[in-house]
Figure 1 (cartoon, rainbow, N blue to C red):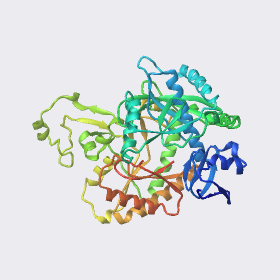
Figure 2 (cartoon, rainbow, N blue to C red):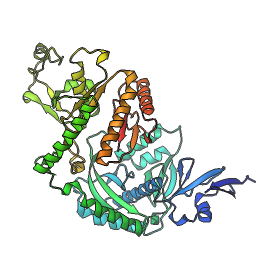
Figure 3 (cartoon, rainbow, N blue to C red):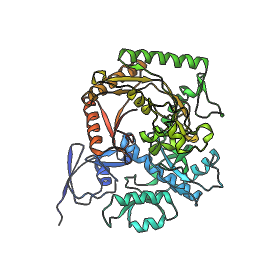
Figure 4 (tube, one colour):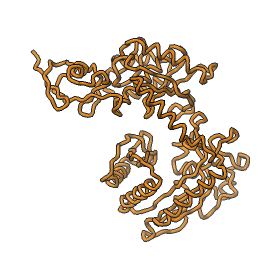
Length: 491
């Protein structure tokens, strides 16, 4: 006979036979059991149907817990995906993750169908039908060849299956979650039944690229709740948000002739310049020198910086001088291959791009003259205009635009000065945000799958950021660094 196991919950220990499920433990000992969505053991989330075979310290999460809400939204995304396929059988689903405010599913719809707000009601009704029944959201394990066969007509799911296979041991089965005959590759965890979701609806839609490709998908956003009380609270917050929505102000407007590029009104320009003058003075106090840099650069620079290889889809590419084909000999005669102090490049027929960020421009500025270690740290500030080729469906107000300015700065310093400079920037941030009454969270974004440089340099850079963050609360955003280096995100 198997030995009983000890389950510790809420500082009390209970004895159970091996194989007991968190659902049973919660039902017998948790006063908030009706609200429970998922279990947690040693930071690992567990479905409530997970058999336990060893001594375990367990806790239970609800919609009011961040991780519990994330699981709830993720399960809701599966319901959305299931509903989409029932309405549009030829649709190709891509990814359906949770977000901070709900969830979405990316989907490739039939070319003959233009998705619009008129589709919302049909999807809402189908989702209501799904959650009206107590249908299990079951975890099942599949052979990789079976999943590949099931999704042989879906290049998006095949990609995710291939990525999952790379991380698996040979012959290891792949996890998927099923609602009736709907099968979705997913490690989970999820809530137990569809009827745990009481309210679910589509909120908006837009466009999104599939990963780093130019394949444009429809992104359908939704929101869901486990109770009417949570839904009522959501609606109250929506009303408050509309009242303070900056898009309803008289500070700016956007024209269809220049999407994502705001026009600032007289009042808006006054506000803009007031903020600019304030931050300009703050830069001076902290030893920054303001510079002005060009907006357009040869692709030779973007190739050197790596932007053309890694960020091309987000850049506005231009053909200068009519894009004429000019021989290599002519380019060489005009010193086009070496755009530095020897040539200003004015005679070069070349491909160019609007700058999406200031980093390469500031590097050009730094190398323009010989510098000594005594010049360091060199702190540069730049309020120049940047352009990024965002998808039209993602553009909104001033929060997602194609043309913008930022109080951008770069610091050139010696290796031993890095940590001190980063601490100085974080102190700068504290000062400005406290005056503007902004709150924020810090996230350390580490090396992504696609990166330049060598791993040892990345490890050293990440460790420097970790040391600079000592004494501050922050979370790790694994794999979300820029392709050229780790970063601290302020959100």
